[in-house]
Image (cartoon, rainbow, N blue to C red; front, side):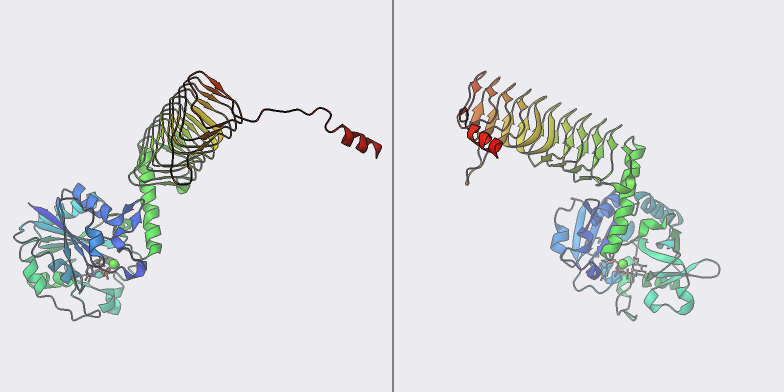
Length: 459
Ligand code: UD1
Ligand code: CA
């Protein structure tokens, strides 16, 4: 049987108090809408239509190829929203899954189970329901004494007895495409909100003698919707624990999952340990056997095997196998560190390529630099890469030895095996294997302080 899905996402999301459409707010580094699309895809649904309204142009950006989008203006309710997909789904005869774009915790398994249940019993409509201790403002599932589903009543429209029902409408449904849009057209808006309720379709089908079913979800946390930023944080915290659980089960040690923050698209290799207060964001990839943290913050970073990274910030860079970074290194975008590089405390790197086993152990700024292998950079070395209007490169050859407190005034090129005397300000290229010293000569004035010493003695 053909399957398609509609994601309802036209609501304004007023309670988010945001210029950004609600479904684009991020949960663990990804827009919440992405999670819903991914769950649908994993449940075997390729044909997806999103109903957008508020800032629909923003929602339409970067959608996968198989995802269509329709506009709903004005937003007159969930039945009206679904009706907007009529043209896009013209002639669709299979089963249609309908879901809100703000429930990112839903798993593909639950969606798959719902669809299979719906298909197996051949229902015209199946509602995914959940039992909640506090049913709040969810729609209530009203059943007959035999258990047969009769209707869904919105909290606003419910009577006293109906309000006590703890089985709620998750807002996720499977519908047979047959006759669906004709039935939607007949729905009225005679309710508390003057909206066209999709939930009214259930009662309508029951009254018409069509088969309606309910399927209860096992873990009701999956259907937590996001309406405000408190719920956003709540959902994010559940998602974060899911991500960390998956990592731990795949062989990563997470010492303190309550204080570790890893985005959805991060991959981590086996036997890597993540220490507390570490944040790994974006599309980052960490190899096996690394120790990351405590206090590491990585954004879009690739890390090879066996690296150590503590108390450092690294952005949009690549760190080779067995590198040793930190504490307190700041590696800005565009850096490539080859294998076995050491970058120590209070070192800032920007657009720097550092060759195999080179060391920048302390107190340096290295920017717009290409450095060979086995280079040693003394403490306090600075590349002066900016002349006030342009950035210039520094090139440092293999095995160069740079004394402490050196300034490289770029553009400048240091040959392989060159040695730079401590405290030099290098403004000209240095040939291979040369020693370069560029500082004021030391002058000693003998006896300069004798008078003062005598005076002090005399006192
Ligand atoms: C809806 C259900 C309720 C259920 C709850 C689950 C109805 C009438 N009620 O209530 O039974 O318990 O979801 O979360 O359906 N939307 C549009 N266009 C519109 C209105 C809404 O696209 O005109 C979208 C929203 O963006 C949202 C979804 O539909 O993704 C649900 O809308 P919302 O207004 O949040 O409905 P609820 O009052 O939560
Ligand atoms: Ca809602």
